[in-house]
Image (cartoon, rainbow, N blue to C red):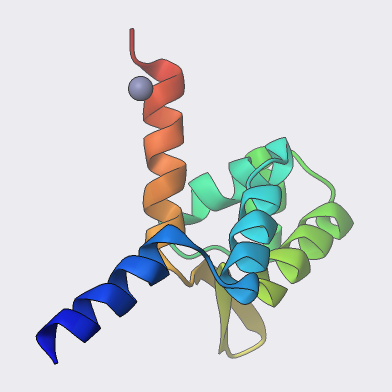
Length: 109
Ligand SMILES: [Zn+2]
């Protein structure tokens, strides 16, 4: 029984299922855009509205909205309504950790 379980786990490690493979490649694609990297990095520091993001990063609001929709579809960001404002924050800590690791990698000697 225990051996069977181990064999199954090994097979899972050796070969990714199609769905995981697709999601991983889509997620790396999401992280491969400088504007999306800037937005995600900002959101790693707190909740921001579209306005806040646009002003802080000096981007058009339409650009920010477009990229937030993209990131939300991939469940990398989530939104919260407070009165008339909508605030965005990271949805997934794994992906944010990957991003921070990549930024660290880019900056270390
Ligand atoms: Zn490194």
